[in-house]
Image (cartoon, rainbow, N blue to C red; front, top):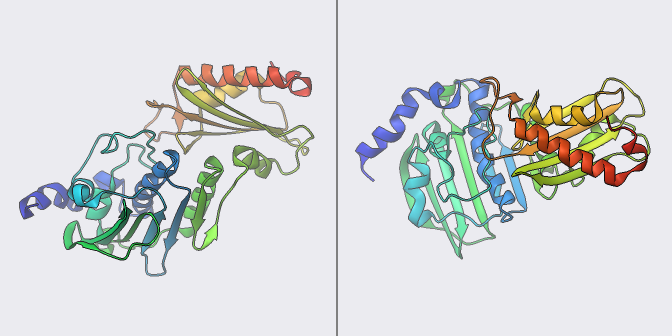
Length: 323
């Protein structure tokens, strides 16, 4: 592509980075990581990948690798890494998630523009290709490399001239990735050489939140009601205490909203209740710009319907808890 195209597309990102990633502090760095990890999680959700790893070096380099199908770099290099996008994934595949703080996502082209160095290696249909960029400009065109395994590896160094520091908060990253591991129980998710895998899923998260549980809990519900994916795990803490209802939308944490209300409509908020609810939907709407409170009435109805049916079928002690 021409130099003029590069300037028009990505130079404007570098001129106003806060417009694209929210800030040039830690929040902005986390946005870069979230967009890249989101693409890897897409491969898992599409049942193409079983493993995603994240590594952050002392020098600030970030490496995100998956064992999915890889990218057709010969055909899509410019389109993916040098072109801004405001819509969904380029290939239109579903599902797709945005995991970064700004729920709309910004795409890897923006990440590329805001990094002093950005490298991609993809193993796709028996061929392994590599390319490298600096500040959004292609500096090492596609070359073939030895083929090992399958998937995509992205390695990038945020530009200290823009961010002041390229250091991610590793504690925050680990908390976020562990949370993501609860939501993706079949995924082998690694961080800094350690596996964060949580094969028990949301039921395991309930146990972690509750400590000691009463017999008969937790139990989990998975259903699809009117195009809303509903996952709920419930438990009763032996220690009592105020009710805890944790909520997520499309693999992102929320503070409350329609999905949490669906749980409360069924069970109330009795002492000792520990619940985790995850809703997946194509067009989430939120009360505030922070995207913390989901406001979609259909989700409230979907969670309530799925939960009431599951508890009624389970019967016994749990049925006695229905409101």
